[in-house]
Image (cartoon, rainbow, N blue to C red; front, side, top):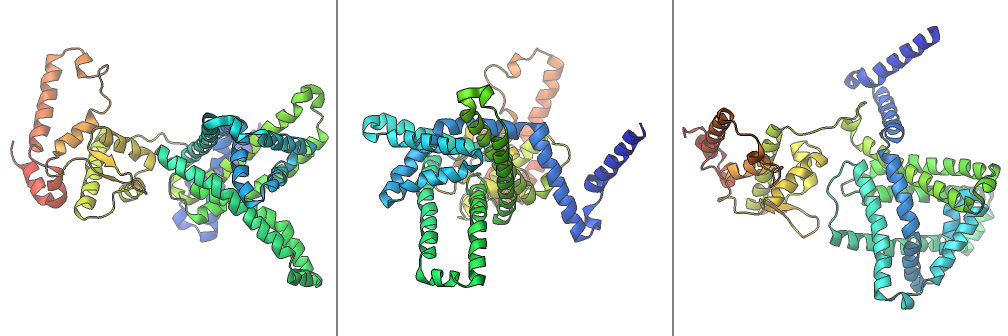
Length: 455
């Protein structure tokens, strides 16, 4: 009982030091230490208690199994033009190295599957299905990263197709070009002469040992930057990539040791190889998503909250923000500036993207805002500001959830309630009868006087 009391006291003290103390009164090193501890706690919460991260990793495992062969097939078709497609299997062996002999078996099997794909026999429909499998995998990955970064707006289908195929087609070429340049450099006469010197030989050994770690971390950082549909700072992506890269290497060593010592073949028989392959895919995706969470919490200190909050906008805030969104879009329209982007709107209004996006969608559905087709996507008024009444904008938000099934007419009749509700509606309508979006933007003082004038 005494030990339990001591444990509770220690836990309470740690919670106070990490979550309840004022960071502005702490020295800089202590602020960084507390920030690191907060991120560690939040990652553990997201992995073990929230379960969303683990569910996303499981979903990605299933999608990877379906799309892995098509993805490699598309990459091989591109690399054949550069004469380096034979490097695919060694790369697979490096990724599946923790599986030991089973990794060699899986790599060989996947390579055989890819070699058996005949584009002439597949036909146009088969090739389209092949590309769809690859794009669907990339879409799943984007959705998982968008959830981590609290982004609710996804790329359009046209943008997904162009961006994803660019990564799929150009990515392998860049990777193997870098590998080829490294190999060519090591075969030069100058490099061979430098290696004969003890100091350079030691440095070359260190570089050859560290280079795979650096490439993994760089790959993770690029994924964190380009996959989420939001702006990710390079420093934040690099922090997440370094930690995820170290985790990937350490867990890989532990997994290899587990494979070498465990004898699950007697239980799973012929399914043992598939069983371990799926586990390693799950572990790899989990590590990649953990790194993305670290990058997110590093970039957004305001999100380091001990208890996850289910933030929702009040009706009053929705109405205010709807007017502010339309005003921002109209100002850019009159000033001949680029269309308003959602990320810029979030920063200007100090409201999270996942809270703003539903409001913007409501304004789009009511034909008050329209999204541009140009990259990057922005928003402009769908109607002329001089004819768009402010009351129309407010009503669009207030009536957004009503439909043919659920509306005011469905509610029971109450004459007293209806009377006072109509009085409230009429007073609000009279206050904004002649005020338009142009008045709000171009002549706010006039709009203010109009709203104060007696009805």
